[in-house]
Image 1: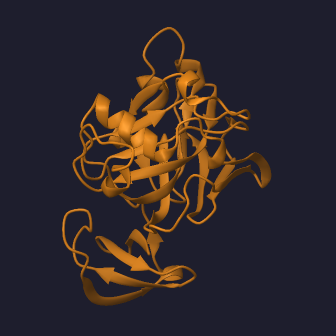
Image 2: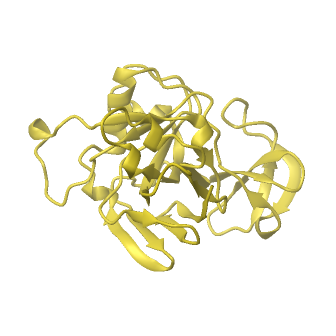
Length: 255
């Protein structure tokens, strides 16, 4: 099942659609905070505007340096760098990434994103799937020229720096430890990797982060980017696709 958040020209609506379907079954309320119950409304996918599938009430947690082309033994893995992105940085599919006036070096970073469904504190790796609602595609947009000499907040949290979408894939059978992840800049392939090259798996990351801070329903963890990220300029288009989840496209403008 895929959970989408969209607009039909009025207020945002939640809905569910099956793999390959173009019809969205409307849902009553936010599935993170209320039972999944059909509203009785049916929407055509090509007649609605998809929005960010989740608006984090609390936080987006970012992970850095989480891909390697060589296998690193578990006892030799460095702890992953962790940072926060403001929830106001979140945008949805087709929304423009706005390069800030104060930056001349903004880069895209295609990543797998984990959406948390319940309060999680000191969760074990084996219990991590129980606190995960599902997965979506993220673009951890970064103003690289604001990343030196201090905290990362400015370079990671500016408005529009966290596109998410197109929906949340909820599928217990999906092997998120072995999904192809690719990105395209103006149609040219940039990133081309697999989540199999993660140093820390999605379940290990949920456990790790939950031992540092409490995770709340709707929180998002962006799990790090494989090689191939690059600079974007006004007029560019970035598309990120993850096998079994979907494709996220955003144009780039100058704020």
